[in-house]
Image (cartoon, rainbow, N blue to C red; front, side, top):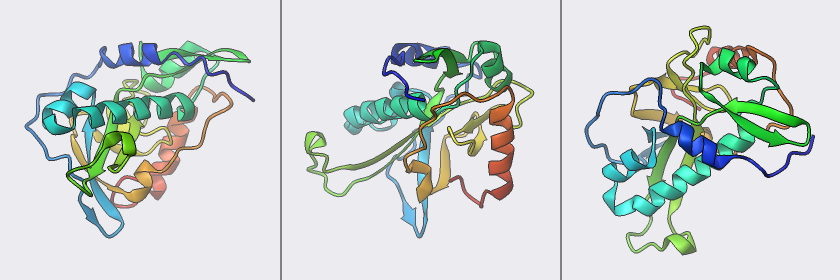
Length: 206
């Protein structure tokens, strides 16, 4: 099913401000990605401000990563015909409208983003894309019926730990392009997918 491009990214940005499970303040963490074999260290940020505070020299990079994550959220997150079906998986007021040719759908609001970077050259130029960057959308289910309640999860159901987690070890697949979702899922569908993902997960998030 072909979708329109009238995705309400403004709603997603607004929803980011209504973070339900307010995490405690954390200390400054290094954002430089540390690669070791097939695993990498990445940070989790609920918004651009926290990313910029940790990385004052890379404010523009944080903004770009956030925008990339928003776009991924719009394209790859699960879609529902009814808002209450979405809220069954993600919690009250954690879903936003999504426009399609089929009508008004609903999707979970992005609650944060996975962020990591490799500095190849300190004299990089963002416009020329000399800096390799990674970003991926994360959601935070607040429905107690969800098997990943209170955990950061990707659009594909991968869990990255509890809501107060700010640094995780991930596989290189964590930043791979996510499949675009072009059909709706049923109530509880995301929870079922998350359980399947958890059953085959390795020692780090993928």
